[in-house]
Image (cartoon, rainbow, N blue to C red):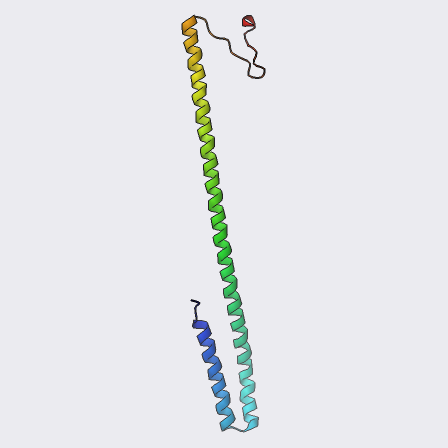
Length: 134
């Protein structure tokens, strides 16, 4: 439920000002009532302006708060995606390291088995780097 405090204060002030006007009409002459009303009209204007400003500002603050909450949620989603991406990169790097270690272990095993080192392969075209082995 909305906060009703400012609304109640505004209603009470309008009732008080209306009561002052009614009492002035009953008690004083028309010329004096106009003077009282003339003094009250400035207060009425300020009060109506304050109410409009308050409710406009309150609704604007709600909109800003909703936008802030949406921005925080979007930021958290982006951070989660970054963490997932980093996690996938780390898993891929670990797998590459594991495969590289297996290749190194295989080359070591084959060298020990045959007694001669295996040639290195050129990564760009797949040719052997050791020209004697071609």
